[in-house]
Length: 99
Image 1 (cartoon, rainbow, N blue to C red):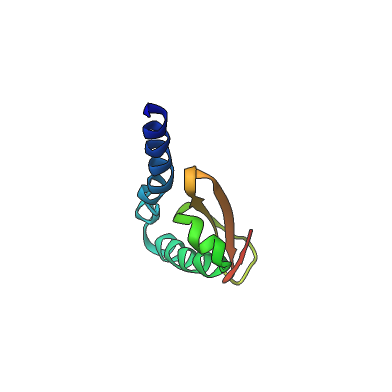
Image 2 (cartoon, rainbow, N blue to C red):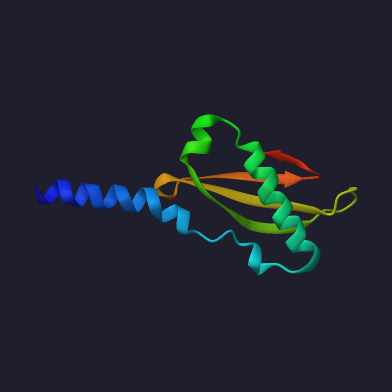
């Protein structure tokens, strides 16, 4: 019986825990913050498979880096956390997401 209780607790932590990860936008200011907010929106659009929408619990901006010689100014790395903190990295550049 104890094993079942521990298994249920671990599954609950693995499923609900990633939803508590902050989005990371608050670490940036000015133009970088606007780029991070836009990248979160683009990353959500990029994760369009129904299974991904079901499993992805939160998104977090990891890095906002300047781009040289491009029309757009920022490349933003976003991590999409699923159950048990498995993540997939999505890179948003020039209003296009890849990853």
